[in-house]
Length: 146
Image (cartoon, rainbow, N blue to C red):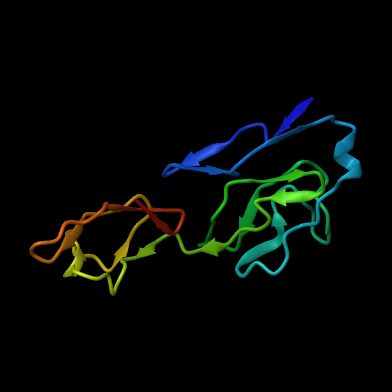
């Protein structure tokens, strides 16, 4: 039996993809996966393993591809039993917008004072007097994570 994907990546405490499966290699071609469709900002083709015009994956993995200056929300999609896991991805700008409208947050919710965080940047959460933040935030792959 073969495990796919062959590795899992952990970003900010989340696995990508969130799980894996095992199957016999001869099942791979019979259970091909359709390429992700309708992803705003995706490259053409949407998986780096594909050639232009392909509609199905040739192998067990899809490495999401985005247009220039955008990052994929997932590092890999795994084709398992004819279905992608996770089933799609998003293309995002690598920077993160500082959260707004947080109840009892300070006027500037991040101690750093920035309105936008660069990739890997941290927001040290600040609250109004008498309140404490539940966590700080880090900008990873265009999204904020605790």
